[in-house]
Length: 334
Image 1 (cartoon, rainbow, N blue to C red):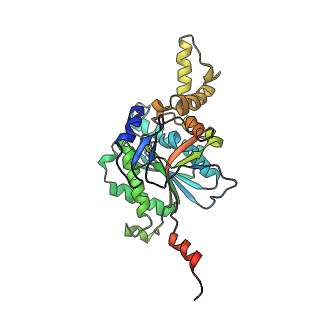
Image 2 (cartoon, rainbow, N blue to C red; image 1 turned 90 degrees about the vertical axis):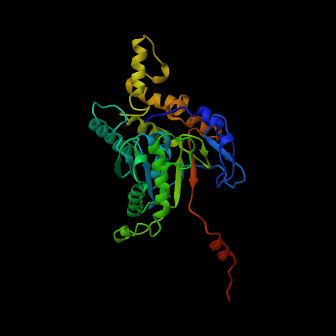
Image 3 (tube, rainbow, N blue to C red; image 1 turned 90 degrees about the horizontal axis):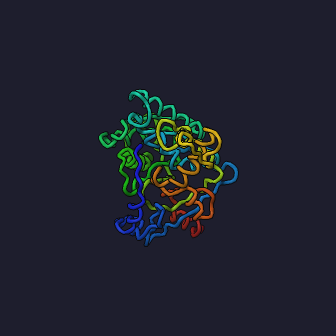
């Protein structure tokens, strides 16, 4: 997948962002993709690893256009939620036919499919669903079809929580990203209704109540997830993306290039395995994160909030009925 450096765009985002339901985006922290919102009650919440398995019985849908999207942007949070008891499923919307290495389209598709399956195994996800749309061409498909397929899966799997791209993220240039994001948001909203009634002969309406949305560009961030105990899982999920993305074997390739020039880099370690792991941890997720992923360093995000490693999200939780709370507190016998 193509990546660009959003540093200049990010620095300008606060000045040009338009009003939204969360208030006017007034400024942005330098070196961050976090937009600060005025006139809003949204505050940044730190989500720490929970004790035990409080999410047993809940279902997580992890939705990505390409096989390396979740590994790059949200795999620490996925690993955390699975560890805490979620049953998880991976949904990939494209077939990655134009991405990565391979002498033919068929070979690229197969290689990326194998990598995608490996990502699911690493993160502990139970099953993979491939929707198979052509890479970088999702904007030519009817979004009603994409929504309908996602609605069916949300109902079939009884999904409680989704992780995907933010449909309100700024400056996203990849059509696969923003089309997937908009389809996911619309589908989760409609899945609990009577829409697509022909589906109701085989599945029941089911509302998705929680969303973790990530973005490559500036976005409103109201949740920081501590992924420190799961950083090795995040590294491993990027390590198995060998066909595309900045992970895979790029550490070993850098080590080989340096060796041919009579040089070495201590941070890469003594062998190819160590080089791949250390390259992902130190360069992809930290030092060169803006160039390689178009997002700030996970280490620096964590450091800002007193954590070792962290991921940032535009988060929506289950809605609370203030009416029910009021009734519970104030209702008295007749």
